Amino acid sequence: MLSLSLKPLTPFTSIKPKPSNPPKCCISERGLSFDIGDTFFRYESATGRDLGVLAAAIYKKSHNALRVLDAMCGCGIRSLRYLAEADADFVMANDANEEYGSVIMGNLERVGKRSEENKRWVVTHSDANRVLTECYLRRDYFDFIDIDSFGSDSSFLRSAMGAVKLDGLLYVTSTDGYTSGGHRPQHSLAAYGAYVRPMPYSNEIGLRMLIGGAVREASVLGYHVIPLFSYYSYHGPVFRVMLRVMRGKLPNNSHYSFISYCIRCGNSHTISWDKLSQIGCSCNANVPGSLVVSGPLWTGPLHSAPFLTEMLDLAEQWGWAGNDTGKQLEKLMKQMIDESDPELPFGYIKLDEVASRAKLNSPPLGTILSTLHKEGYAASRSHIASNAIKTNCPMADCVRIVKELQQCSANENEKYQQVVEA
Image (cartoon, rainbow, N blue to C red; front, side, top):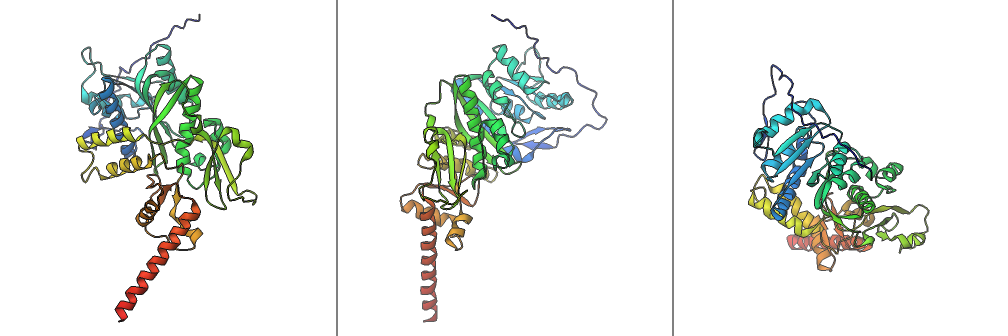
């Protein structure tokens, strides 16, 4: 059997001379102060960091252990927060850029200088794939791996799954909104194994494309993944998914299939692998190019409602929800929980599209949701698009409902005018 002799990753130990005017510690997040120096840092990504910390803390509580690998740590704020807030037992903070070393070290020292007594963290500088692969070959597995990458580089997926413990958490990222919009189908095919074409809910496609790529890579290793939450943020854009890595094949292969969207009727459908030769739409549209198909993609739930509920409870305990500073995070998680309704299909419907098909102005979103519920349909807001709803109601019925609501509004206005004139 082939035996490999591996050279251990070299921790960052030498600190370059500090500049005469070092950057002041003027940035704070959730009460933690830190420096960013010349590293790349996005203030807008704080929500994604909040979600990651909450998930890591829940894992620590249930497993009584938390070893974290922050594969692309930047200035080290995520590593700092995993140590200080999620109470990680150990964090490996890695960034390929050695010039970030002093900034990362300085930030992590806020939870205590590294010493023989304090071995809670280490800083390394290497390519992320190399770090992940060497951890796997040394059998040095982590409970939680955070890969905050750029673009649609999916090469980290397989190496990360080799380095994460079974039942561990993998926090993956894509920032390639151009590809998820269906503008580079050959690229999405190469990166995620999915041929993606333009669809009206492209930002949800971005999340499903990322999960689908993880499903494919996990199956090669004999594993499967379960999305605990899927988060889209417009800045970037950023697609972030928290996955639980499990042993064994995907229990339900129907969640990894194809998606169709009919431009003529506005409805979407899933297409299983054995039905690919029978692709069509129930509206029987014979207009060339009216049916758009993408896939294979993840078509199952984007979130786990029980896990998100635990996260929301913890956020409330920590004071991250239910107050002025926590309203947005609380609102986001509640919307994700609503989106977890198993009756809801993939995709969302933009109210602008409904209004355009009805040739009317759209009623308030809350009014439409209330009416859909009264008629027995499942419906919720979408955390991805503010003017969209997720529902199992066909487009034709959505159009009918908008017309009926408009007519009711017109009748009420007419009655009010008659009362005023009387």
